[in-house]
Length: 424
Image 1 (cartoon, helix red, strand yellow):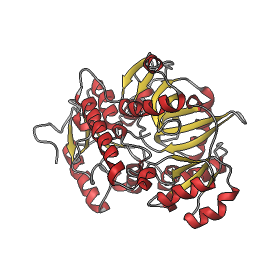
Image 2 (spheres, rainbow, N blue to C red):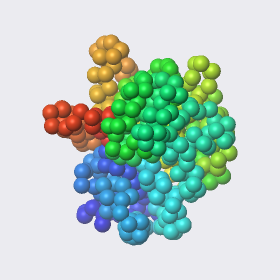
Image 3 (cartoon, rainbow, N blue to C red):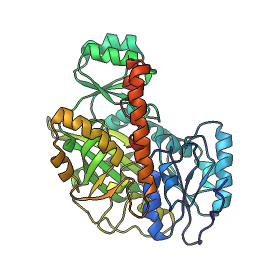
């Protein structure tokens, strides 16, 4: 049911948009803010914890879909909810997946959903392969995309058998990233590896990935939009300047830097696999062999997509909307130097960079030169930022309280804090 008092129809020439994502993801808020100047009404999923997108004064409304912004429950029931939303929104409404789970759900039910919404149709096997670290590794090897070596133990016992053959340090990542299962950590030796696996609730969902040495500036992000013929209509690249967790997590502070090599590498790979729609990709430049190696591919809207806004205001959400509504997508005009910050995540990261790297307060403050946009902050739309800070304060309190009442062994699964709930 739509939020009472809010209209659910728009002029036929500007179809509305429904973005599906968990409540703390910043992607829906970015879509609301980028499409509003075009006169587009953007809706989100209603959740018990009020989402960052729903806090925006510009959010057009919310629908009951799934549970807590996730496709949890009966597929048939979720499809009925989406059908009800489509009837209220009217013909031509556009559906955007803001998480891996929703990307898989939409691809799985593309036929019935295609009669209700417009969205890029993707092959379910390809989406599932890209969303899985194991599947991505196999696709990358098959189609010639450089990738770090991986090992996937089935359990702690198998990890103990293969541990002596690994080159340390190794990164531990979930094979399938889902809310509550988005840990990232580093094992420096055999003992550290086995201890961390024993501490996890689901050690079978852990992948050991080769660690590539370097700095945050060696981590690159690609954001792009590919049409129904797998042609790239918009491509953007940038570097991570700070991460959360420090040196191995999501983008806390990033800078737009045009990188033709990364763009060419990505376009060639995604054309080979026949990809369509919005994509968010992480690479790390390996100075040992001079190659950009893919770390992950998110077959959906990325959390940091508003870092990539060209000189004329184009981003992947706008490119997708223009293409699906039959409008031309203008050529990208690089906007080098633009910076974007995920406020809550950067505040958490600051503590670790000060402790581990000696980051000084004045240098931290100087790093915000060139920041043109925050993930949640806006003088004309203040509630999402206030909500994110409130969530950060509450999470910090609970984390400190847990030190006294929760087993320290659960700390690995908490390696990525809520940080305003942002996704990659």
